Length: 407
Image (cartoon, rainbow, N blue to C red; front, side, top):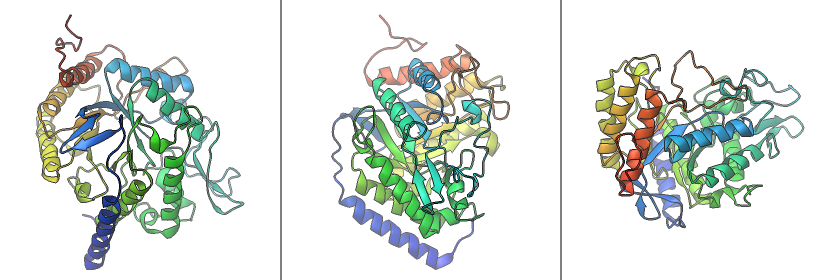
């Protein structure tokens, strides 16, 4: 389906993979205590198995402090140990001379992308280049998120960018240069590649204004991801870019794992072959692929076996099933049981946990209906029971069927 550039593209990928392997091989893989590592198809923490039972949330970098705290507290209440989000928003110039391609000042609440004036990256018309907002309506919000993650003994998977233009992402960055090419320009133009490297260097080296820790030294971060669903085309371009940028991240930060954040469904996680990527990711939504509950259950095992062949952990890092389905709680329970029983499956992160907004209301997703809430519903209880049961099993604790410890 995707365009291919023949032998030239293959040569570029081969060269990038070779360079990545050389660069990565020189890195110190002995991360200090409290950093998540890998061992075969599993994650480990301080030498013990670390099975991921987690949640996604899309507004943690721009919601109010109270909205962020509610999400993190609900993640703890669910029994989660990992939270995943993206570094966003990205805008045009503040004076409008370089347009923002999305509704930066729109949205009714944080869940519907009301960012309240927050922006992390923007175009500076004075310098004619990308600029980074390190202030209270910028990276200080990420400082706060990391500090609170650490307080709760959670781990954070943090993608450097989103591919999609919902809050700017890579699409806004290619638009800075007048491009309308959504799938190729960002990944091959020297200017956007330089911007991405500058952004990565800033983030991993940033000193948290609250904790005093450099991000690269913060064990609250489980892993970096190159980008959420970076759908570069052709695939040879995506793999070459992933090899180059993962090796670059490793050269700056030997402590943290690196993943791609790619959806990985149609290409069956081709980036497992990239040396600089420590684990595989896939995003599974039965609705989008016309799969029944049973068919999706069988697919889970197929992806974990791909990880086993590559000798790397595999995460089902996004999945969802509409709340309106009468069997939704049973479907979640079945899939999570399959994941927990397969020794080649490293864990899961549900899409997506949302909490009370400052309005006092839960956000309502009328489109996909994938939202998970701390509402005591059968959906919530299925996820909570699975998260707590797996964590207790790793610690040798016997839980009840509801996920609570026995006396």
